[in-house]
Length: 492
Image (cartoon, rainbow, N blue to C red; front, side, top):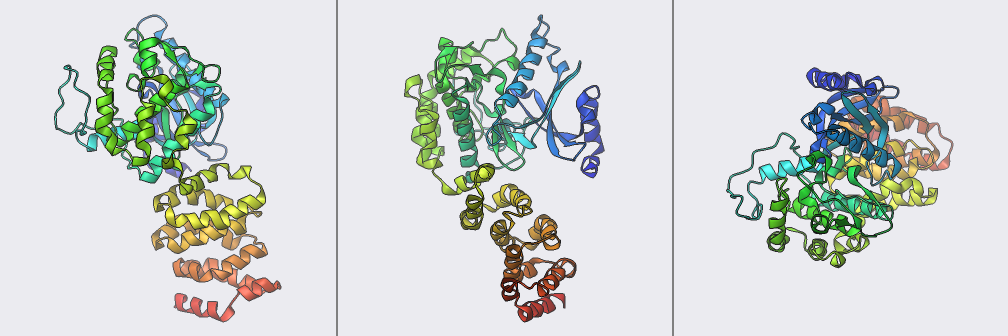
């Protein structure tokens, strides 16, 4: 655990110095800076590990000195309270599959606010900033309002940009996650700031909704009064103007349909090289001018979206609130009806299923889906989950079915570095008969990938143990001479 943090002394020192007076340092080791998130990207996120058990986390930090320039009375306190409230709502509106999971609540001191959450690699804002910078000028940059000149040169890369390239599978999975998060929230609250800085990408590649600084509690889908964006308030104390729905800015009311407009803007930004259709630059007048030409922007960018998503995404950006779809309508579009995405999502809720359903999922559904799921997702999402599940006695035999497939399809390097350390626990640990049988039936796969030294240390004891088994099923599975010949070839 500590070696991970000591690999970059200067980064560790930076994180520790920022939090030098915050009690969270008593509970967590803080590592290097990772990314930024929240209003105006005000949360700075660091690697972290919980001291008692080494659990990996992300430490979110707000340095109060960033608000020192807000000289007007109580503005600094306003920002601080908004951020504290956002963490409170994350804890209150818990949904681990969809909402950013808080591991340790806010610790407040004179200099900083800090809390610990599940490990993240970036906010969507960080990633889209990178894509905007490497994509050069988008075919459709900010609409001409007479106040800006569009050039053909590439944008300079912002300091907050985070290099990451999404697969189509990840985008589909991610958008679906955020849509389901809004569906979860809608009976209780309106999010009121759905934008890239409110969406976190976790270490396993899952998109989680965060940024609950401005949520509005309400009856289900009832229109309520909302404050429009104004230059009279701090930017960091307001939603992102580029993603605000027209009715909020024009008529001072919001609803769940307002969140659908904002999500639609996020979708278009994702497929438009990271650039939103409205780039108001913190100016309400610029927002209004660009809103007037929004339909032209939609028309120009629409071909970049997947064909199955185009009609629904266009409806989401309707200026007529009642013409926008409900989130369930979005989730039922053909674009999201992808059984392989659904398979990956099932990993998040597998513990809600009974034992028979779990075993059926691992042995059949997951194993049969893996050939159609990108390898990046295997190692980022599937394998980290399976390596813990296969240690559970009640499902270990079922879990080994997709695990053997991953071993068979992995490169030697991936197997040795990513999979073998976890497989050693299976080779050397206590094994029920079904586990022993599956390992023996697939020993040729294991032998093909395992280095010679590890065969001697890990695999030979497995085979010797099988020789002593009295269970007929194990004896049948254990093809003595075939495996011994195979072993002899590998060891020589």
